[in-house]
Length: 66
Image (cartoon, one colour):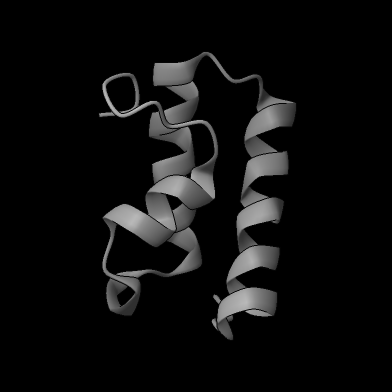
């Protein structure tokens, strides 16, 4: 999916291709790990994407993951 749908950021997947009701931080980190492998992200990029997505979810969508 990551390669075929031109995924660039973790939030692309979380906001457009998952059910937010089932999302928690552990799942967000799992999705990030899958994307990291598929897209060749470094550990630093993966962590940055997690932080970015958490910020977007909370600030733009009122969703706080624990």
